[in-house]
Image 1 (cartoon, rainbow, N blue to C red):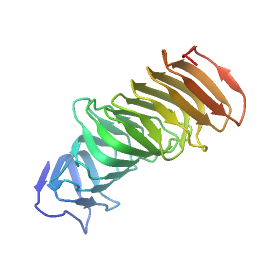
Image 2 (tube, helix red, strand yellow):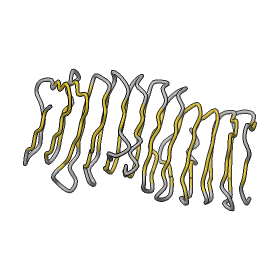
Image 3 (cartoon, rainbow, N blue to C red):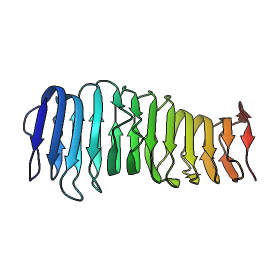
Image 4 (cartoon, one colour):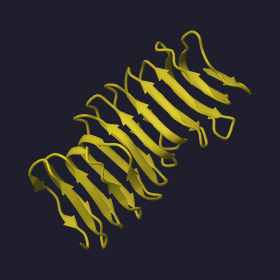
Length: 232
């Protein structure tokens, strides 16, 4: 295990390899050596807006990552990115790239403001407790599952996936980027939803209760594999 606490910023000039848990606290954290290898990683920035940027070559289990209003950048290319349900990722922007590794961020207390996510045709599953702005989310032919229950779901970049499976609870969903491209779409909400898609689309189960559903798909046939429930 590695435990490191610094009142200033942490940077590096060589690689860091930790067989078990690396637990790091600092004002800002930049560990971007391309040969780093962590097994489990916990981070805390001591300042109100401390950022953390991490590169890892293997599969990685995230422990508690608390950056407050700071931004989190993670590039892990050697395996799956996982998270236990009892730990949390808290940040402003979460910018995550895993290459061919799957993503499972299942922490029920996760809270980030914006999410950018990239995988190479592998699945990603994300839980978030607050309102969320999706940036660029590209999982190629992988499936994307998102459960965000604390506020509105909006978008600043395109969503590309095979199946997009979205749950927003009482929050509205506005996925109106004109470059969105998903093959199949499932949506659960108790509020209104507006969706744009550029390709042919198979609607799975879409249940908005008494909410309204607006869909604009311009690139191919619209089909259905599940029920659509909405007001308008």
